[in-house]
Amino acid sequence: MERDISTIFALSTAFGKAGVAVVRLSGPRVISVVRAFGYDGDIVDRRATYVRLHSPFNQREVVDNALFIYFAAPRSFTGEDVLELHVHGSIAVVKEVLEILGQMEGLRLAEPGEFTKSAFMNGKLDLIQVEALNDLISAENRLQKNLAIHGISGQLKQLYDGWRSDLVGIMTTLEAYIDFPDDDIPLAAIQDARSKILSLMQAVENYVAESKRMQSVLDGVKVPVVGSTNVGKSSIVNLMLGRSSSIVTEIAGTTRDVLQSSMEIDGMPVILLDTAGMRISDDPIEREGVRRSKEATANAHIILMVLDINDADIFNFVHEYGAEISQDAYLVVALNKSDLIACTDDMEKQRYIKQKSLELDAALRNNGVRNEYVVVDVSAYDAADRRKLCNALAEAMKQFSYSDEEAVITNIRQMQRLESCVRYLRSACEQPYMELMTQDVRFAAGELSVLVGDIDLDDILDELFSNFCIGK
Image 1 (cartoon, helix red, strand yellow):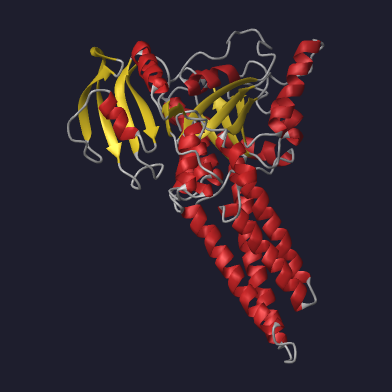
Image 2 (cartoon, helix red, strand yellow):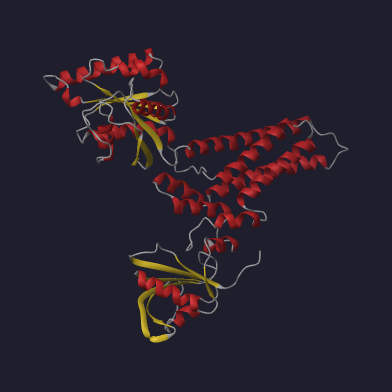
């Protein structure tokens, strides 16, 4: 790929009022840019230097008081000479600096992702790290951020390179036998190769399955808050969010649609879905709300069921809708309105709550609910009970947690290549002839080569880097 050797520049921070704005330059002319702004002192690699920027076209005009940092090639992000101008985050200042740079000879505005593309072309980042960097920039919660950092750290490439190395070893052994057709190929050699291929296939397959599991919750663990009308679902949602998000009234059927709110619990993204109270209604709008509630429940990761602990018919909801509860979802049951329990002392209150919990277990099991579950007694108007609910959900979300040692993927391109690799390995295990087995192993190794970028990538690079912002 022929490279444009001009020096590129762009604003690397968000455009708008801010304390500091960073303008990044990369290429052979970055030092001449500093000189053009009127600085004639020493330029030291990786040292922040104060400079008064004068307009190259009118040295009497001060553009800004700034800092610059020079990163000499190849020890820079792009592998080229890089300059960062740290100017005041004034819209007027930023506009003027960019206008001046645009008028300098040999400089041009960077294209989207061009800094990162330079880093890739100069061997500073591999393809997996590039994709992870894009994910990191887009990350909106701690889970997304942690997964992206694993990719940037090089863990993913090490994993893929290890698999590819194993395949190359298997392929080398197989081809050694093929090269000597006059010798009988020991049956044990074929069985050993097939065993190694099968073991590697299972490792990749398990990794893909774990990655898909994490992908399903990356944007948020879906938690519909369900129950009958007027049990306090919307109040529970408001309690967990710490703000008034859902309308709360004493009128049954206030919530007619599924209202979505986002929060984080122990670093995991959570999507709370305040649903319509489930009941039979002649109102077509409310019936649609109930239908959507059932749909949300069917697609849930975790279900937060709210019951009124003081209701004489507390388990009617379980009897009527228990069969419709997704068997794949963990169940958190909130026995709400515990502050209204008519008991003379705390001991009697605790006995009452324990009795209701035992009755709940029987109601769930008798109505076909086999989900794992936990029970908490709460009052939607007691701020201290927010922690109870969050702890219960955090316990339920452990099924989606992952070790900091792991590096799973959420990138579709990588997922597709790994799935293709698995298909070739499965085919290799089923081949009756060593030549065909070797060919499938070669194809599987080729998928891993494409995955890490050890091929001619012109056909995908433009699309990949176009997803980056201008200053990256």
